[in-house]
Amino acid sequence: MDNSHYDRRNALSLDWLNFFLADVRDGLGPYLAIYLLAVHQWEPASIGLVMSLTGISALLTQTPAGALIDRTTAKRAVVVVAALVVTGSCLLLPWLTDFGWVAATQAISAIAGSVFAPAIAAISLGITGPAAFTQRIGRNESFNHAGNACSALLAGGFAYLFGPVAVFYLMAAMTVGSIVAVSRVSARAIDHEVARGFVPMLPHEQASGWQVLLSSRPLLIFALCCALFHLANAAMLPLVSQKLSAINLQMATPLTSACIVAAQLVMVPMAMLVGLKADRWGRKPLLMAGFLILPLRGALYTLSDDPYWLVAVQLLDGIGAGLFGALLPIVVKDLTQGTGRFNVSLGALSTAFGLGAALSPGLAGLLVQGAGYDAAFMTLAGIAALAFLLLWLGMPETGNRVVDEPSAEPSLCR
Image 1 (tube, rainbow, N blue to C red):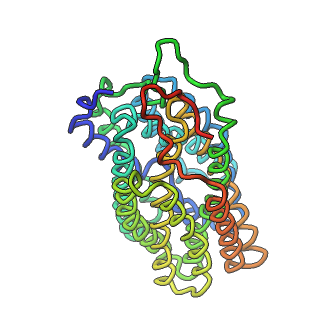
Image 2 (cartoon, rainbow, N blue to C red):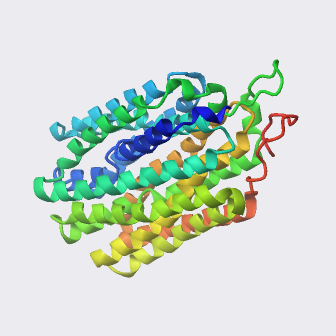
């Protein structure tokens, strides 16, 4: 596309969209576990179950959400509606105590939140085009992590002063900021064909069908790696939050915020590193570094119950999740370039890691009740080690697979 469309206003608007949406896109996240434990005195297994049900609800909509983003030209409006639904669902929580109602509101929040990842990736690709996409994603993730760090600091401070309910109103304020930011992105700057990864070479060419996606061996392997990664990763911070609550209930939310801030501050340079070096170094070395950190982190959590040690170990999440989060849309773009199925493929990958993330809290909650926190952390570390081995042995480098030549056929690399 014509890169003259990618002007300074659009770049800054995308920056601020990622910053403000950071507190909205994942709903309450680990604060849900603290709120249910501190306010409603729920058991760990019940907390894990509602978080798993929430994740499963999101699973069912990840791939359709990607398909919606591939088809719609109202991508900015989709982001606005989703942000309002997520925030509204969470704002109802202080008035709800019944398990069914809590699970329902959080399921609605998760379903709405499933559109954020493909929508932001599509808007970014539609503005920058494939050549500048890696740098834009690195910048997106940097501002996203900066927003997470800022909101976590504010949440920790407000929760200490006013109680856990303060995080709900902080989310509302960030939603307003994200709506303003997305409204500043020029609709005319988004090439909606490029945004779905379709680069027509001839006038009669059409986007690839589903069978092309399903026959891509690297895409299927990467999906399995993503599922295992999040099966190991998703429950770790909520488990740390519960552990901190058992040590000091009043300090649980501020210390969880410290965990989040510590990790997010490390994620910022990791995302910048991906944006600057992933085209030169390749995707796989950076992915392997991110995957290797996770089993190490899980094992280190078992060495001490000291709150400051737990916060320090959480720094490693900044390396692993920071690299993985920035590389995910880049690898999917590499593998789907020219097919017109970028966003639905990103949604399908989100379904894969969403499945792992949905099962993770339930599995961890059962392990904690049956064998204790250390057994839960070591089990998650073992799953993470398996994900690393699969990535190392089965996943090819994708950085040299982008369709750049005008004469190339738009197909998935196999």
